[in-house]
Length: 386
Image (cartoon, rainbow, N blue to C red; front, side, top):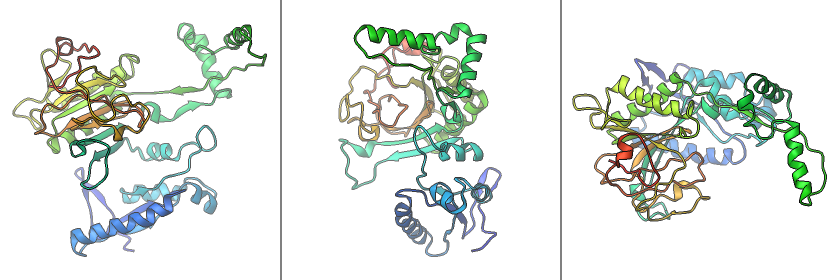
């Protein structure tokens, strides 16, 4: 292995040698099987693309169950050092017990290496079976926040001293907000148990069990995510970027994400408001001219001419339930997502981006925006694309 064959960054662009060293984590469970098949595809693709003039030098690094068994460490420092040194790496599935045990290795990797964007291109390939009427119209890219919001990984287990400290702090410093924690006191828990017993439920001892999580969202964290998404849209000549949020419920985190996203579009790309905003558009004469930046509230299904596969199916993977008209855009996701659409596609509908991968995003057919939308007010049934 050539030790100096490292991928580097020069003036913001990757410099890739002919024989780059790329570290990989084989992964747990099905990871070894996936890797054995995948590496053959990777090597064959490089061979075909470059006629044998270039090749990848694969360097295995340890993480997860395999690392723990070999070196008694779930995420060795050597693994993190390798990713820092070689910049580009690949990872298989890693063991993370749900609800207990070790903390998420995926979250740890994101936090330590500051991998702030989870970028997910989603498209259909000819010949692949699909339940969608027109899978060839599926073409989107997801930019999901990866280190802030719930992905900061700041949480405390119910019943733990840490969770109790947070509860005590809220009870003392923010008594009004503390009341919103429905079962934040033993008294409230016992009151509920008494009600249950009054309708025939058995007696039992109830404890104070409240898990606590913190979702920090900053301006600079929003800036780099949204800037990345808009830059991608400009470079790849996409049609629009949609900020997806829950600002209707969480105004100072999700709502700020939306407002800051528009600020990034204006400050960095010269976008101007459309009909008084908040939607905006990059004007003629600037890079990305014509690109529309808009927003959508997550988990809202607009009522309109929605039709096609997946309508009303709420508990199956959303990627299998794009509508007949299909999503013709990129969507950046996070809690916050950003949707971008390829040009030349007629009247695509504004999609509802979702928080979980198991909720489908129904689409609506295109149409004119309502007065509510032009003034930043969105009513169910009035979400339409430009």
